[in-house]
Amino acid sequence: MDRTAVFVDAGYLFAAGSKLISNEKLPRGELNLNYDAVLKLLTGLVADITELPLLRVYWYDGTSTGPTPQQLALAYRPSVKLRLGFVNQQGQQKGVDSLIVTDLINLARNRAMADVLLLTGDEDIRVGVQQAQEFGVRVHLLGVAPARENQSGFLVQEADSVRELTLAEVETFLSRVAPPATALQLAVQPASPSSPASTDAGQDGIKATARHIAGRLSLEEVTAVIRESEGGAVPSQLDRQLLLTGSQALGGTSLNPAQKRQLRSAFLDECRKRLQ
Image 1 (cartoon, rainbow, N blue to C red):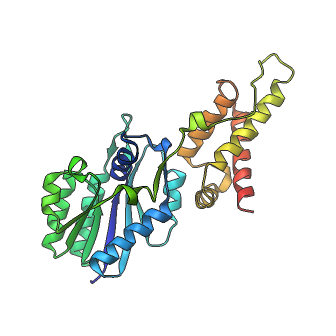
Image 2: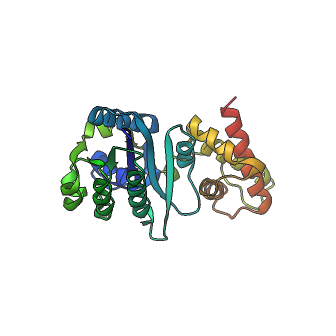
Image 3: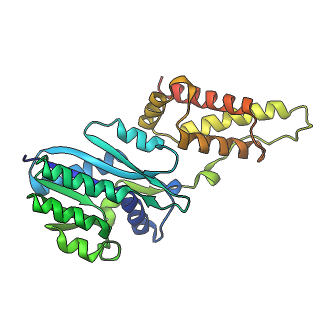
């Protein structure tokens, strides 16, 4: 079928992109990815290269305990398929390459696409490229400058065409932000447990934490979180961040079960306010 698809290895995009804009590999918490901008850029590139209609964008990423708000927001987008591997305790993505290879082969075998724009650098994807090409698919490899430093040479050799994203292009969708720990500026001074004001300070810390974490999310991410939070449950990745930040706001003390419930409820209330 004369359609095209876009495959995005998010781990590669973040790693190579952060190195390009900052000269160092940054953790995800210090990066802001504008999904509207990157999807517009990638779908525009594949249209220019192939002049074919788009099947969909496949976005491959890893997770340790569940999808992040950013990943959830992507999953709800039209014509975007979120595919998740997992992240181990060492922070390494596992299972993502096999998802990419499997989809390359299956879509090619089923003649669901004639061309694919593939944003990755891992040599393990090479076998999927080879087999997709055997079914007649043209593979257009996209890298992040300088691609010679972050893409497998063997993978480049297999591709039907090669292009790299420039610094100017990457800066349209990826930027550096302050890490969450230093960005948090809660106007709360933790009181000692024996202080009569400790209860009020604790409540203020919970409210400030909920407001801070909700404020870091885009409206699209907030919408996705609300959709996933039926029954008062906060998505697991976000819940860990919420509880950790709440603990920091209360002077590093562990939250008791009642405080955890209050914090989750306050956070979801702040999210709903942002959508009003």
